[in-house]
Image 1 (cartoon, rainbow, N blue to C red):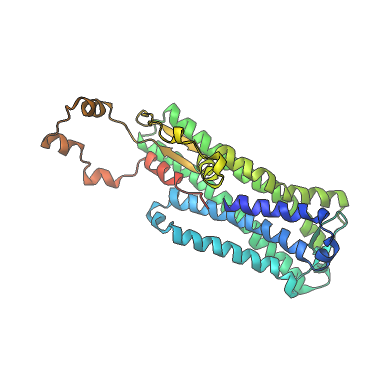
Image 2 (image 1 turned 180 degrees about the horizontal axis):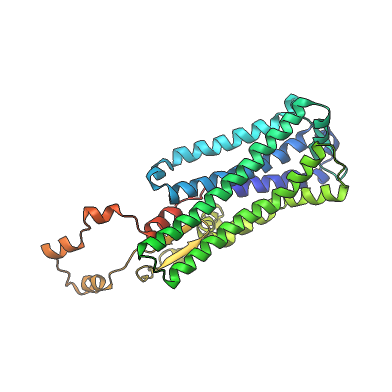
Length: 323
């Protein structure tokens, strides 16, 4: 949700300029460039934090207990503070904003040719806010893919069912889409800005296209999460009252699922709890009986509880990604 909020704040900051009679004053005051850079950095850093949380839940289950509400709030605060630092540095004299020819205010990359501190700022902002997030996002999603694949192979001695292959393909597709969306949005802008900072003449059309690609992330990020994440759709229903289910839908009886059914979304995987149909029939007929032998047979042994199945890994993956 924080990604979508920052994306729409970015769109608001951009679309409010033509209708605002104080546009020139805002641009001279560097407020316009500050807001655009701030919300862009928040979006990048939030995507990075989401990928790290998914990695911890899926690949480092021994540390999954650290992913709680308190720590997630601390991560969100750190994302905002870091973004405020890098976006506010030009307002304090470390770098500067200026009006470009295509109607936007951005960092003046060309000052890196004449000032060592500005060149240090340009290198630092791209290293910590583009290259490091790119490495983290690629590493975490590749690790998740490898972990799921290896857990499937070790579960049945390398005998992978067609359903497991479908899950692996789905994980790979989701991970590739997220990584490709990040690269598509920010790589052209990073390359053009670095070239400009090192004194190369960039054609205005190239600069415009790179800026459009970077800001297009605020357009398609919501569609990626709405289309691929059932958790995000449920959270969206909670925000908008008109999208909440009616009372008739709330009281519909649950549908019994088959044991082992797996649902896939962008947040990870979640396996439905197995349903004992024989037990449900006995309850309805009033014939439920329990014996010490049956209780002991149904109780898992300590040795079996220590092993982590692929489906257990999927449950851990499904709890992440709700920043």
